[in-house]
Amino acid sequence: MAHSPTDTHAAPEVLVTGAGPVGLSAAAELRRRGVRCRIVDRLPARLPYAKAVGIQPRTLELWDRMGLVRDVLETAVPLRGQLLYVDGREQGRIELSLPPEVPYGFAALPQYETERLLEEYVAGLGTVVERGTELLSFTQDADGVTARLRNASGAEEELRVRYLIGCDGAHSTVRKALGLSYEGDAFPEAYMLGDVEADWDLPHGYGVRSSRPSPDGGSADVLVCIPLPGTGRYRMSMKAPAAQGAPDRPADGVAHGLDGGDGPGLADLQAVVDRLAPRPTRLSALRWSSVFRISHRIVDRYGEGRVFVAGDAAHIHPPTGAQGMNTGVQDACNLAWKLALVLRGGAGPALLASYDAERRPVGEEIVGRTVRHATQGMESGPGDRRTLLLREAQLLVEYRDGPLSGAPYGPEEAPQPGDRAPDCPGLTTALAAHPLRLLDVLRGRTGHVVLLYGDDPVRLAGAADLVRAAAGEVEPLAVLAREARQDEAALPSEAGRGPAAPLYRDAAGEFARLYLPGGAAGFVVRPDGQLGARFPLPDTGAALSGYLSGLSVDPGLRDPVVAGDGDHDLELDAR
Image (tube, rainbow, N blue to C red; front, side, top):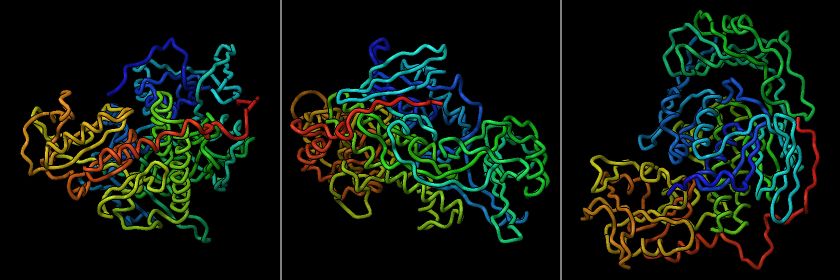
């Protein structure tokens, strides 16, 4: 169950730097698990720019687990597909259609709206973003991190926390202070970005990609338009003409993101639209614009000691497919539940090493894929169209080779440890007048959930008792096979201690179809919605013990998370 907000006057346990979508997601996941944290951002207010706009279905699933998704669905617009034009002629249409069991589609939402919704959610849990506050330096030792902050008034303070998370962007202060490498390169072109209204009659909810090949064989002239909330409103991107000028390369050499100078005017954007739009179009209502550069880089490790990086602080890449912000949100969710478990004594500090082991391979794959798609097109990757869309939706992210994933069990095509735990419809209970989805059942839960499936209520109750007897935040839920007979709302405990587990019937047979249990079986669902283990129901006790032991560390061993190069004592220019 979700924790209530902790005492905001008590000392914080975690400091989060950077209040973009990634930092806010980290704070949200920590706070709803009862972890005290502070979140600071050097900017005095949210930036009014529609930078990251694509919201992937996997991100919506994570926000559903948090209880935030309704607000997002009421604010965002659907992304139904993309219209492709070459030399003004339509060459194809990509439909963003997913299998019916996937609960959410693709969406578009300006980044400042995403940040507003997350910030309000975090504030509801008792933590307010401290604007105009920057991290100046930090030291860390075996017991914690000492940070030096400067607030908007110029006053400095020293803060002691257990852990520090750097979500402070491509020019990350935390990354530089840790000395993490950030290898990669920049694309040579500069681009213009603008938030405008267009008066064309193209289908609602479709993006537009209109290109014109270069006569000299160079890179094509391209206009990309992503729909935003509002009538005829789009975020448009296009190559910047030489006269527009490219932004200066920053001092740290990372040429990525918006330029701080004056952006192009409406006439500059209109000139490109006149040249490339598939039909005559008049632009109006320019809300903001900028010139920007694109780089592709990734760190050599996602943290050191008690300090971690996430989002753009760890990886940057082309915006193709809207992967960046969504990947960062998943970074935050992966790290936050592990930090919470360690801080509450439910796991050993060695668990935190799995953050890098699981997330860095994902970051490497996404950097490589988005660079390939930016240079060779979206169809350049392996797999059929269905696989491509599932991958872009981030529904295929898996940690099968990660240190927390148990041994495979069941059919090869079944979801295995490390995979996303599929959502499924058609779950019924004696007290609900309508079927539920698995996401409905999991919403608000913060710990591990063990799904127990079978057709024998007595055996399910026995397995549920074993789960309830396990150490840590582990909760059993029973899924009764469609053909079984049972009308109760919960399984009675064999041990006589009240209900052993809530009971849901797989009335539509969708759980069996999607999970392929192959008989009575159990599934450990991690707090981030990935499968941790699957096993035959008679092995519940041993399998759960084995999984949970993998979250701990032998108390006789030196904490490997804080072992390394020794203390850091860093002073830096935090511009």
